[in-house]
Every structure is written in C-alpha cells, then in structure tokens.
Image 1 (cartoon, rainbow over the protein chains, first blue to last red):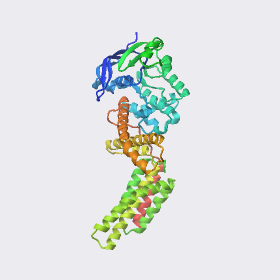
Image 2: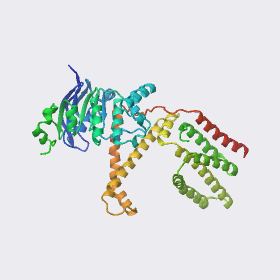
Image 3: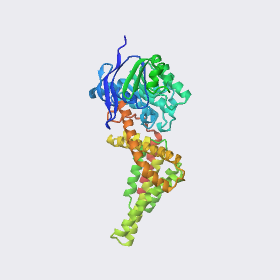
Image 4: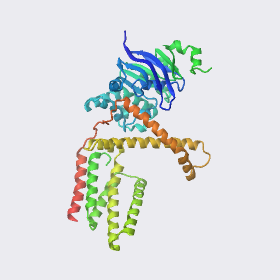
Length: 237
Length: 227
C-alpha cells in the first residue's frame, strides 16, 4: 500500500485584498499517483498548487510525505516538491540555460562538480544540450517549457506539480511534452484546462470551482459526467 | 575580445582607467598612445558605429555640464580653465573608451558572473543581477503594452502618442512588473532560494587572457615611463 505523498486538511486561503480563494479543501494524493486538478478560470487551482510547497500558507494543514508544512520545514518540503509554473518566463530568471538548471541543485548545497554532472545529465535527458549556453530570454516558448521542467526535475523531486503544462505549445510540442510528463516516475499533480491531457495522464481528478472542491474521483467517471462538467463551467452547455 | 575572461578585462580596464586618471594633464603623447591603443581594442570588438556614438552622446551632457561649471564658477585665469577643461575632456573620453571596449566585448551575464567570482561582497553582484533581471522584464512589459496600444490606435505612432502612452500605460506597466517580480520570487523560493545567490564558476582564465593583460599593461607602463 503506497503512503500518502500529499495530505491537505481543511485548507482555506484569503488573498491580502480580502478575496477568498480556497474554502476548506481536503484531499490526499498517494505516492506514484497522477492527479489532475481541473476547474474554470478563477477556481483557485494555482492558489492550491502554491500551497503545496509553501509559497502560500493559508488556514488548515498541509503535509508532504508526513512532514507538516511549516516555516521550519520549508526547505525539506521544497526539496520534495517541484513546482513548474504556468508561465516559463516567471520560472527562468538566470542568464543562461545552464545557470537556470543549476540554480536548484546549488541551493541544495551540492558541490560544483555534482551540480555540473546533474545538470549535464538532465540537459541530455531532456534533449536540450544544444541550448546549454543560450540566454533564457532568447528561447522559444516550447524550449522555455522544456528548460523550466528541467530546472525542476534536476532536483529529483518526489512530487512534480505542473501548472498548465501544455498551454501555448503547438500540437507537436504538446504531444512531446505530454510524453515527457508521462515518463516521469514521480507523483504528479497537474492543473490544466486540457481535458485530453487529463484523460491521458491522470488516473484521478479533482474538480475545483470558486474555491471549493466539488468532485474527487476517477478521471473518466468525472470527465464523462456531463451534468457535473456543465455545472462547473468545464463543458459548453 | 569577446572570448577573454571578464575578470581579466575588469582588472585590465580598471588599471588602465586608473593610469589615465593619474596621468598629468600635460602628457599629450601619453594620452595619444593610450587613445590609439584603446581605439585598436575598440576596433577588435567589431562594434557598430551607431552603438559607439550612442554611448558617446550619453557622455556629452556630463562633459558640457562640467565644462560650464568650470567656465562660470572657476577662479582660474582663462588658460587655467582651458587646462582644466582639457584635463577633464581627454581623461573622460579615454576612460569612456575603456568602458566602451569592456561593455561592447562583454555580455552582461558574463560581467555578472565575473563579479560573483571576484573577491567582492556577495550582496553587490546579487543586487546587480536582480536589477538586470527586473530591467529586462520591465522593458518586456513596456514592449507588450506598446504593441497592445498600437494595435488599437488608429493614429500614427509619434511623440504625442508616446507621451499619451507614458501617461496612461506606464502605471500599469509598473504594477505588472511588481506582480511579475512576486511570481519570479516565488519561483526562486520553490527551488530552494535562501537569500544567497549561488552560481557556478564556469569562467576559466587562459593564456590569451594573461597575454591581453600583459600587453595592455606594457603599453601603458611604457608610455608612462618613456613619454
């Protein structure tokens, strides 16, 4: 029986301007699972994802592999949870691709030789060695997506959290990226509007709407539930 | 020039600038030698004329301001004022040439990496790195806003449009830049950023770097000693 990778209990969050983003969200994700989070715009998907590595800390409790998310445990949590942002321009802030991918391992305290080896290996696995010395600002969107994923995977996280991974990608890029995500052995939590991706990659789906967790179950059972999907803005009426 | 280690270039051009500044104003031949050497280095960077002129025109207002201050408020005779103006102008132009050659031959990210590897307080290169990053996406936001503005503007883009754009769009640009900086900071925290910027020391000093340093210092020191 696989242990729990993520446990969120009664998580609520209110933004500083007073807008309530999450209401009493409770769910668990088991090790090795691939879970999709779907919902209309403004449902709170990204807000929920940002709770998983402590960028946001609202009410309630979140645990990652049994470690309670608190200020003193943030480093340990962030070693285990890799978050790939929706916009790679937010994720890539170092001058070159090599520097950006090396950023995470350097913060883990690895030696320069270990970091160099990890980065070179990851660039090769992601087939982006040719971008090694290129400035990140000059990459295409598909290349940026690959580099931003590499910059997270190089830290060997046990949980990979992806926020809208295929947005802005062309059909070929989208297919290749999906295959890349499929091949990851880590626990995956994917927030997306791409229902096709959810069907292909996720065994389970959480549906968020206006900050509430309205459904949690097997992917096909939820996506094929037309009244549920229509009621929460996920299928045209 | 582009392939030389930026640390060696920082050291070399700093020494050159120091030697230029301490050279007495009456050593015309020395200034000529410095100028010729720096022009040769400038030529080796294969610059665009426009980029040099643009940088030079940034220096002009400063020189004019200093010149006016000397002329209007200096207590010396005319010949003394002319000497001071000559001293200011020749040294400013030569030091400007040093910085122009360095800047045209060194991408900003290599300069930042060199600063991190030099024995300087770490906060200084870290602040510069953040400043460069924020400036780049600030201009990125301005470009996006301008495109959106032009797409819905039926008049030609001219100075009046630019003033209106600055008046109405810039507050939004600042706000978006602040929001974006928050997201970038969140991305840094997600990858374990703890306030200290760590980077890899990928620069290596080679034979060409030592040769450049040696030749540059020999030219300047010989000019100092012989002229």
